[in-house]
Every structure is written in C-alpha cells, then in structure tokens.
Image 1 (spheres, one colour):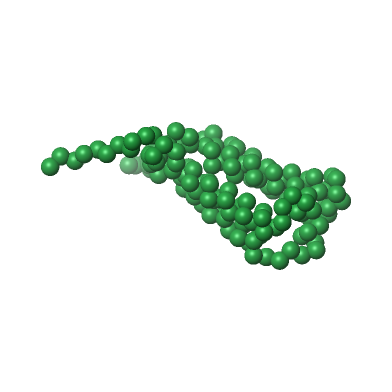
Image 2: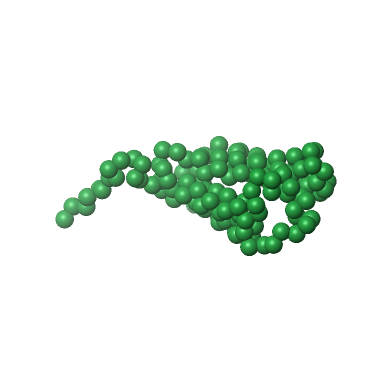
Length: 149
C-alpha cells in the first residue's frame, strides 16, 4: 500500500508544524489565561481599585479577566494556526500589554493613582516591547549541536 499525503482543502484548514514560537506562544497564552483567572476570581481591594482606576472606568476587573483569558486563548491558537500568519498572536499579547502599561501611566498622570503604578507601567511596557521584538525573530531550523557532534 502506498501512503497518501492528505492535503487540506484550503490553506486556512492547515496548521503549522510545532516550532519554538509555538512553545513561546503556548506558554504565554497559559500565563495570560492564569492572569485573567486571577482577575476574575479575586476581590477588588480599595488600593487595587485606586491603582486601576482608568481600567476600571472601562471594564470591571472580572471583565478584564475575561479579556486576558481570551487574549491568552488567542495566543495559544496562533501557535499553530493559520499557517500563513506567524506573528498575530504576538500582536495580541503586545497590544494587551501595551494597553495595560498605558492604564498604569494614565492613572498616575491624570487621576492621581499611586506613584507605585510607574513600576506597573514599566513592567507591562517591557513585556509589550518583548512581544514585539520576539515576533521578529526567526524559528531555528535545527537545534544547535555541540561542537563534537
């Protein structure tokens, strides 16, 4: 019997092979889902409410939890699909991180949130930058080998 190569009916029905970016996007997706679950399950304290006043003017903390969960799920989906777009999951993560960074900075500048928000601004801003930067890196074709191999 000859083996038959089954090809999908359309490129959108195919998936990319598992690569290094697949691992990064899957782990990042799981982390964003975990953050979302924590936002969804935790009670909002007065200090947290004051720190996130700008974000909470838009959505409740539980709704932000859903946004993080959906973003994480999208990042995980993007790890393998669609085969013609390799970086869209990073852009989801970058956009949410940059927005969350802006929430912290806007709170300090416009609403008298605590100055400790500046560390949230810097941390989420760095994460947004890293997602943007990582999206431009190439998947290694092979795992590096030791010199004696």
